[in-house]
Length: 163
Image (cartoon, rainbow, N blue to C red):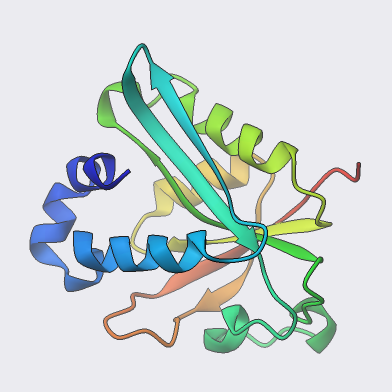
């Protein structure tokens, strides 16, 4: 996954310390140690096309701590089983606009038992936001995580089918 990340984000890594491979690797270690963590990697032959991963938000999660938009308290209350956080969805350039991202997204979320999912999209990437909106995601508000060098994001929500 680190190789795919480094390839896809090569330009961003050079320009933005928030995007470094080391920072991504540390974040991946943190996410993969969470209860309920799941990951999907897509392949074309023996080559990784992309990946998606995330985990349920724990009770009293800090996820919403950087929310800059006022929302009702019950919207951001976490129980440990309410919300699945899609942390990362990345597809290599040759497989973009082929449906690979949607397949990874759908496969990852299909097995989740939570009532909804959340993700963060950098405000600097309106095309990515539009793509998620075309898949049914709704913007909840603006959010800046309490992480050094963190950019401004749109916090988004998607209702998940109940199993």
